[in-house]
Length: 91
Image 1 (spheres, helix red, strand yellow):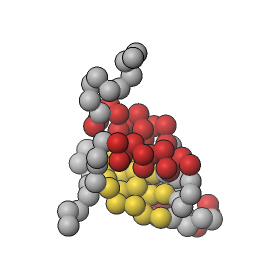
Image 2: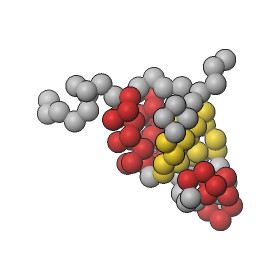
Image 3: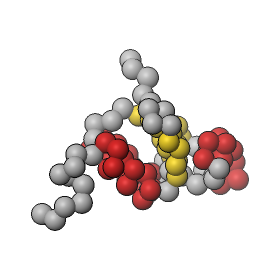
Image 4: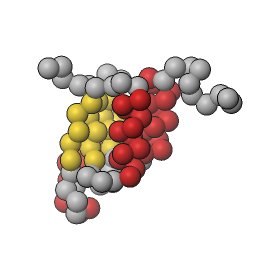
């Protein structure tokens, strides 16, 4: 089994996390899910990697990028892994 370079820190049934998961799957990217503590104050692992306790948070070891906030992560995935003709143009 390959060792994915992307790690997604997420919560079960979190709509913002699911938005990122759908984007990762749309680009057929291998990623590792790390489910974090539901209590915001217990999310020390997320705080260590992103500086915040919010999820989703993502680490992309291929590019050295660590970020949080689902909109930022989706934009990053589009810019980094998307096809030029898939991101943004009018249909």
